[in-house]
Image (cartoon, rainbow, N blue to C red; front, side):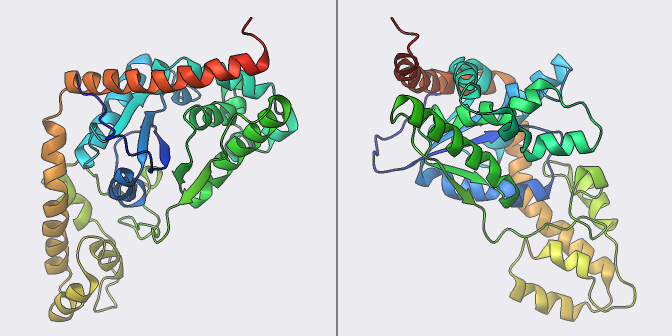
Length: 322
């Protein structure tokens, strides 16, 4: 069984982030979220949670839920997260998450929850806004507050999630005394929009992605489909993706030497993408479901110990312990 080895560095702040698989990952996911996480997680006492209960607001297929859990962990391990240096666990293995979420629901108002972006977006789109989606922010707050997480890495569009956790913590502390730390969001700076093969933001919904763990043939097909401007000497869409994989100063010379040679430049991009992705692809292919379960079992043991200790305090504070 893989177990967390913290090294007992108490000077490190605690970090928590959630992983919720939403299908096949692409290079936009990697540069926007996974790569920054790999570069920073060892600087903290890191908890990486598979948000399987959160996924139930939209996923109704049990087989797909199970597959998403396995894939999320394989993805994290393949990009370089070491389970000996981070607690990797799934939400549903720690029942204190839903217990604390109920208590936090009792601290906030309905109008407050109605302001949540995800809920309003669903309603605006005419989609089913189920009760789980409505109270989603308090389950997310519980995820963070249970572990006294001080740092929560998010994109700028997700800042509200951490603000909601702080508000819930403040309400609880006012009602029952100082109990929860105030988490702070860590906005991923310098991560611009990764362009897709059509020049728009890379997104599965636009069908313009380069798959993160795709085969060389799939990468080749995606790159060759990148829209180019036939009136220019430098294909801008190709260059914007290429500079994610090679130093820009090197690329300027390459693109100068291949002015108007779009095929040559796309082939160079394919080589550079494959050089970065193939080691991760190979690592992922070698990760078994059994290994994933061992990682989750080891992580759940550590996470449960922390969550249970916190909930003993919370239960005492609210009066249900007699």
